[in-house]
Amino acid sequence: MAENVLLRHENIPDIHKLDVYLAHDGYAAARTALTTLKPEEVTAQVKASNLRGRGGAGFAAGVKWGFLPKDSDKPVYLCCNADESEPGAFKDRAIIEWNTHILLEGMLITCYAINAHTAYIYIRGEFAYGAKCLEEALADAYAKGLLGKDIFGTGFDLEVYVHRGAGAYICGEETGLIESIEGKRAYPRIKPPFPAVYGLFGCPTIVNNVETLACLPSVIKNGPEWFKSIGPESGPGPKIYGVSGHVEKPGLYELPMGLPLREVIYDYAGGIRGGKELKAVMPAGSSFPVLTPDEIDVHMDFDSMRAIGAFLGTAGIMVMDEDTCMVRALEIIDRFYHHESCGQCSPCREGTGWLHKLLVQLEEGNAKADDLELIDRICNNMMGNTVCVLADAAAMPTQSFLTKFRDEFVAHITHAGCPLKKSGLQSDAA
Amino acid sequence: MPTLEIDGQEITVEDGLNVIQAAEQAGIEVPHYCYHPGLSISGNCRMCLVEIEKMPKLQIGCNTRVSDGMVVKTNSERAKQAQAAVLEFILINHPIDWPDL
Image (cartoon, rainbow over all chains, first blue to last red):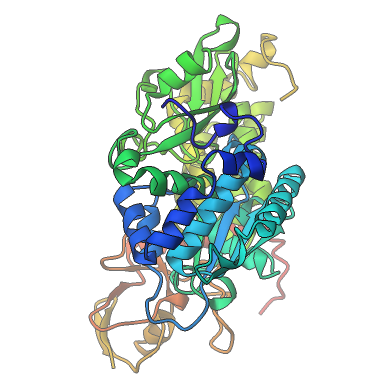
C-alpha cells in the first residue's frame, strides 16, 4: 500500500487535526454515504467488502449490523469499543491519538447505516490523553456541523459521547462494556440475547472495535472491491500489527492482512534483538495459543490462523527470545487473568486463581509431580463453561504453553525451580 | 405444551419452563445454587450445566427454556463431569463453614 489508511499520520503530519483531515479528503466518504447512498446500500457495501471485526473475534461487520431487528420501535445505539485492554495490543490507541477523525467518520457512516442517532465511545480509563484527543476532535466536528443536528443538510442527527472506563479488562467484553456504560458493574451478560437485539438500555446495539470503524471510510471511498484486493478475500483490508517484546524495532506496522508472521517479525520489526534466537510468539495478544518458531510461516489472517489452531485476535504480536522462561511468562499471564476475572462464574473465578497459584509453585520449585496434569484438567474444566470467554482466554494460552514447552515445565519440577534462573540467565525482575 | 426428552424420559410440560423446572416435573433433580424460581436468572454458579442435543457447548439449565423435541441429558458422563468440576471449583477455596444439617 502506497499510503497508510489507519496510521495515516505517518504520511501526513497532524492528520488528527480537523482542518488537516478535511484538506485530505476528510469526511468525504461520510458525505458520500449520507448524501448519495441509502443506509441499506452502505450496509451492502460493507458486507461486500468482507470487513471482519478487528476486536479479536473476526466477525463480519456488515453481517453483525444485519442482526438488528427491522421492526423495532426502540432507538438503536452504536458503542465504539475503545477499551483496548488486551495485553500486547496497542493499535487502537494510535488511531485514537493520531488519526482521531477517521474513527469519528467511521462512526458517522456506521450510525447512518444502522440508523443510530446516539453513539458512545467507551475508552479505557488509562487512555486519559486519548479521551482528551477524542473530546477535542468531537468539539471541532460539532463546530463544523459534521456531528450534531442535520449533518450535511440531510436531516440526519448524531450525538457522540465519550465514556471513560475505570480500568477493568472485562469492560472490553461487549456485554460487560454495555453494563459499564449503564453504570453497573461490568458483569458480562448471558447470550443470547445478543446486543443487536437487547443491548444498551435494553435497546438494539452494535458494538464495534476502533480499528473496524476506522476501516469504513476507506471502504466507502475506494469501494468494496479495492478493500477486498488487500490480503485474503475472506478477511481482507489494511491491518495494524503491533509488535512488542524481544525485537529490534517494536512498534505498530500498517500492512495488508495476511502477511506471513515471519515477515512481520523479521522484515518489519527487525528480527530478534541482539541477534538471539526466537523461542516463542504470542501472535494475538495474551488470550490465544502461543506459537513456536517452526509455526511462524503462518499467514496473519483469520482463516489461516484458525487452520493451525491459533487466532489472529488483535494481532498484538509478543515476541520472546531464547532467554525467556516460559513458566515465568505464563505465570505473569495467568496472574493477569486471575486479577481481571470479574468473579461471577465459579469456574473462572476459582480456576484462574488456581492456575496462577500452581504456576507460582512451579516457578518457585514447590510443584508436585502431577501438577502439570492438574493444570491441564483445570483448563479443560474452565473452557466453554462460563458466561463469557475470559475463562477460555486464560485456559487457551495455558494449555498451549504446557503442550508446546512441556520439557521446560517438567524441568521446573525436576530441578525444583527455574533452571534458567539458577544458571543466572533469568533475573527476578519480570 | 412442548414435549421433550430428559434422560430418556419423554415428558410434556407447560410453556415457558426452564430445564431445571421441567426436569423436576420428571422427578429429576438438576443441581443448582444461584437459581431460584422467585429471582431473576443470574446464571453464574454454573452448577446446572447439562448436555442438550445439537448444542456443541454444555448449557446452563436455569437459563435454557425447554422447547418441543429437545433432548436433554442431565446425567450423561459429560454433564456429570462438568457438574463435579464446578463443585470442585466452588469448594476449592471454601471455608467449609456451613452449619451441620
